[in-house]
Image 1 (tube, helix red, strand yellow):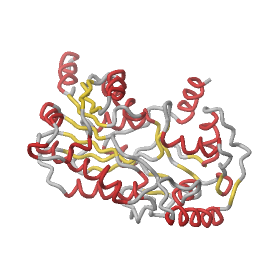
Image 2 (cartoon, one colour):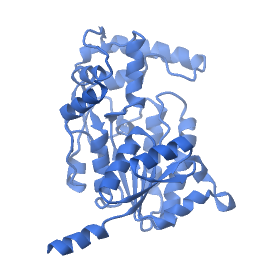
Image 3 (cartoon, helix red, strand yellow):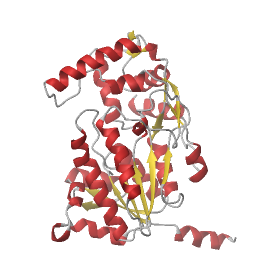
Image 4 (cartoon, helix red, strand yellow):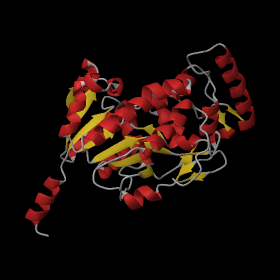
Amino acid sequence: MTASTERVSALEDLMDIFLTGGSGSAGGVIIRRLVADGHTVHALARSASAEKAVAAAGARPVHGDLAEAVRTGAGAPAWLNALYEVDAVVHAAAFMEFWGPDELFVERNLLPTRALYEAAVAAGVKRFVLLSAASVSTGTKHLSIVNETSDTGRANIAYSRVKLRTEQELLALPHGETALVILRPPFLWGHGTAGNLQGFVDSVEAGRFAWIDGGQHTVDFCHFDNLAHAVALAMTRGDHGLVCYVTDGNPRPARSFFTPLLATRGLDVSRSSSYPRAIASAIATVMETAAKARRSATPPPLTQWIVTFMGRDRVYDITRARTHLEYQPTITVDEGLRRMAALTS
């Protein structure tokens, strides 16, 4: 292949991409990666601040609210017409909380996602990349290494249960010319980390943080840059129905990861106390029972999700992503931590 032929081939791979969740930490990194690759990104934004954020990342704002996607017929939002002008959809938006009933997440996540997917199929979009979550498999309590064929079990939070149900419902729908690729990242981190890390930050600042079993259990995670790389690869790779775990490929004991990560926020957890998993689980059960009895809208300080995440070895096998997407992490854990420390120093 000559150099000129390679340039023509590269130009043919450039796409118009519709993205949701672009104003979030992960979404902004995904926009910047796709734009750097030469794609044009149209990002859904429901507020002026969101429009400003996606524009700053390099996307073209499309005013609208994902919740409107469930409207059909004459009531359908005008922004859905943008799907007829794009080659691919990246659905990164999600209502993420570690507390609440399944019905809330069905309303906020599953129904809009299903409606968006059906609209994309009707519009003839070629690719639909869904960002799911590795936590769909947290019901597999006794497996230390999980892959896409592992029994997922029943996750202990509604967010994860509904994420899995969303995957299953989309995979069962007619897909026409649209290839659906589902990515399952675990704990997301990097500069700008907010939601996931903030709960740990609040716990430390309130004096409630404690390790489980000394922080010795292995945790897995995915840097924003590595997730964005996987999304970029999924623009042209992966057959319909491909489901992949995506991680940094370098799982570590919780203490070895969260100590330097929280240090980038000026917090020292190296001397924090520790509880055995059995005691932590019992305390979490009591706290959750009390919170549910008083119908608390916020989770208690310790939940079974935290016990599961911090008190159990869990590694996600990324062989499928390596094979079908040709995925290789682009940033190491140590480099990611160095960048965060440099930006906050």
